[in-house]
Image (cartoon, rainbow, N blue to C red; front, side, top):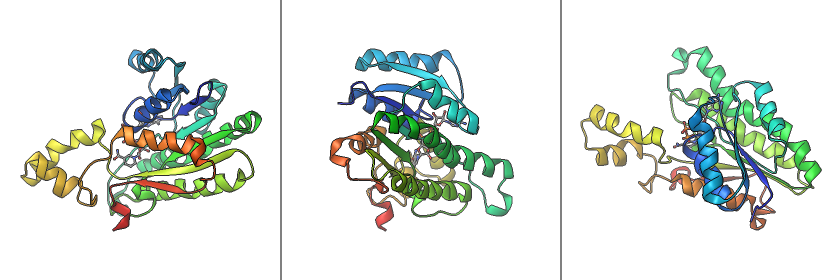
Length: 256
Ligand code: NAD
């Protein structure tokens, strides 16, 4: 159990981040949720987590595209035993048309935020004598697809940062690893199913099997619970000697 430990999950008011937060709360950790918005619904997510799993949970607004806000998130949390760098966005376009602002935003949110949050969290972990950093990379941290230049570059960067963080903490009770999901069933991905079916003139089932999961040999989505369970494992004592590496949760994608 992670009772008494504080887990900060960036970009956790939906999707994988929220799923990871739920599994860490289920395992007893106190939770800090985050996104760039600051709505009633955001704070309600934290209240609901606290009530469901009998842990402390807070929502702290911070924009992960801004270095100072990344560092402020960790400072405001006041403790950081487990850091999950999860915030991320996507944009799809050929390189020559890729908007500079999108490139900059993806590099900032998907990659640099992990650096800034890690930099702010490490002193707290060293003081506590224990820490676990889990970076949510992607199958695109290990392999590429066309038209996703910024995303693939950022996710490969996150895998590199994961290795450096592991080396700099290797002789302490701190580990850093990356989870590399393939396609995960999140509201965002689910919303793409009807559009994809219409675009290709297929049933939704066919669109999932033949288009969306084309590269995922299992032909099944991973779930946010599975990503959360993998994060819990990486924070458990069974994983004490696992550091600086990646775990793919991709139905065989990167085995191809
Ligand atoms: P999502 O859109 O549901 O979640 C992204 C989260 O990041 C949201 O909570 C959003 O509010 C937050 N966010 C976006 N911009 C932010 C900013 N500037 N500051 C703070 N928070 C911000 O998508 P998701 O699929 O859950 O993605 C989560 C992570 O998992 C991302 O890093 C993504 O690249 C990665 N991933 C997703 C999949 C997938 O199939 N869904 C596969 C591989 C990797």
